Length: 307
Image (cartoon, rainbow, N blue to C red; front, side):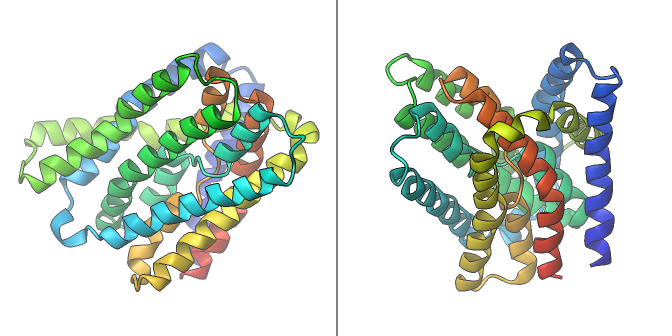
């Protein structure tokens, strides 16, 4: 339990430091937007790519982990559909945003941060490999859900978002890292050290940026739906994942990277996709803010359960 505490508390201290820095004027919207682009397009892909090129994927890759993780995500999509069926008065944009908030995790900034500081190098590589698969399915499902429930169908925005999913720099980095690893490609020392330096920017800056984007003020209006999406995202999704991992006979060490990623709070990209595809932007902001705060406690719960 000590390892859980010393991992989770510093991570969320950085997040709340980012929130305080925004209030004090150190992280203005213009700065956070450009810094977010830098971290998302360069630093995090460098972190993922380097981890995968240094791993032993031929020995570590476990297809059962990937398969059970995907099934858990699809099961929560089904739960959101069952909930929405009982509330026909809920508007389409709200339905789409609620559904994607329940499955769309913040893998790049929070999921990978917890994995990096909690796991050893070999298990972090397992998490980095899984990030590529999980990002692909959750982004594709988010586009489909927003199109299905919302008003963006037929406007061409769905295909635009799908192209952004395919060209996601973290997915490309994960794919490239796995190809290099399985192909036996060795990075030159200079390239490896360059990526190590660049990837050092990813996690601390990403956590500060998450804090700077928190907006708890919208929670009062959207609390019922934001709290339910948070319950599905932080309790139901990792809980189903853990159950499926056990049914598949996975060892505890193999489960932990998947559990960390499934337990990540709602991604800030949920807000971007709601804005681009006719979703409910305020609900997205409320869900991101609430789930991020609550995830400090749920991460301690899930990781404590497996230690």
